[in-house]
Length: 590
Image (cartoon, rainbow, N blue to C red; front, side, top):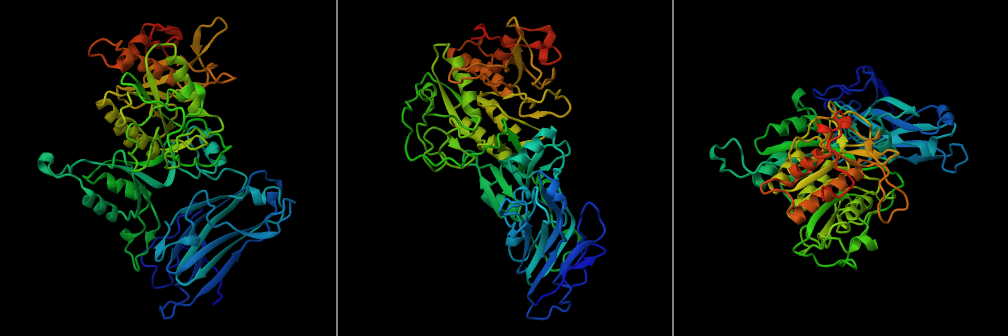
């Protein structure tokens, strides 16, 4: 049957018997929406259900001829029994500035549900915001068109606020540059109330050890309890961190379509799931899966292939080694200066695979090679190495690849990587990355676990030149004593360390400042800049303190770092870092 789209003045598909008490599509403009209503065209539900193939086509769009970047966005509400939706663009496939071919955009959305592959009897949220980057097909091209095709039987597809624009359609992030960088890299995102960017359809959960409602804490939270909670919130797709099975990633998928829902049985979106799961006694923490980044570089390379054997040049660990975990884009373990100090896993079986020298959470395999174009993780490792070789202490670097080649990671990856480092015995963990946003719990719990295991964590303050007292940067601003937040300094013409304009700052949350602008390290032709490189310098000082036992009895290493920084206070830095504390470049703290 070939049928047509109509205009729904109230934004519903309520003329059929299966709409129930669903609410209208929740678009920004409100009011009506374009509708294909298979349910309404068979109001009595007569069998067999008719099959439909209905297309809604736009007029020619000429404004794209003047655009260098082009985005397509719209709101949709789609419910399928055995039906699919297809979005196509009539664009330029010959690079001659003329639209010439209809191109199927299925599977290419930066944000929103792909309705070309909806499971049977499921539906999107009623405010599903969809974004495509159509630059390659539409920028500088005249007479672009769009079409939406509904194919199959029941139920409906509502579409509203279709926009073709050169402007970023995503909400503003904090800082604003993050959103632009994520979009340039092809990462769709949503934001929290403070501008923190996160993956729109994912949650990170940390389970309690016991059901806290049971007296005496004698009822452990087992797999049966977990599955009951997952079922309650419709979680069919999830990933467990092997290093701590209490940590899980939940992927929120299209909701089952109840035939005649009541108002409170409508689609439970990610916010409802998050707030509901927080109230469960079996859960300890639940957060959006926040993006975090080291230094976003969109010249992405492919994934790392898995290792089949121990890489050449890796040597056995020594009992005297202090172990420094680098959670970043990986480490180039073929570098002659680094390879002899790469950690060797004595058992190599934590992930059910041979994790010979660490793990790659970005590709979920055993190859933590740094494949980022700007070699961010390797540069961090070089700062540690460059500092440590000035001493006589033994050390090893544990590469944990939490970030993809673009320098982007997620809350789940960095939290799972933290548990890996703790489990494998790291004494120091370095975080040369971060994010801003609302308060969160899951990584904070991991940092507290590190504290319980006497692990010092050094974290970059960030490179936005902002005071971070109101919108905090995580993990640097976590209020845990083993978390050492580090700002960046630079040298003036006389060699004196002074404030760097690139560094975030806070006299309340930043513990120390160290050189981070114009850092020279062995193996690099040019100097490097950022709090990413002041933090590993402090990590190296901490490693030396562990290795040599230079801290007073009973005084933890993180306190030693702050005390040493206090010996080199600079009153001019009091407004930038707590007490104006500085770790100097000489060896007074080594």
